[in-house]
Length: 90
Image (tube, rainbow, N blue to C red; front, side, top):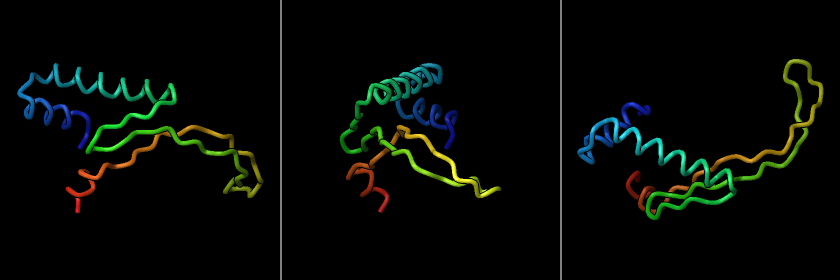
């Protein structure tokens, strides 16, 4: 499912115009992104939790030349599915 299909599904499910559904989806993703940028976790009970994960600096290798190189530390978004989401899939 891509973004357009998700907007269509939201519009049909909530009986909203597509423009309103698109604005709601954009606001939702923006709010989650902003919270993660601040280092906060976002928990949606029954669905799951978005969190910021820390990746330590490490040494890697250039696959073409084999020369070692340093890979910088970084922050990555993560998602842990909730109990209800897991149970609907199994």
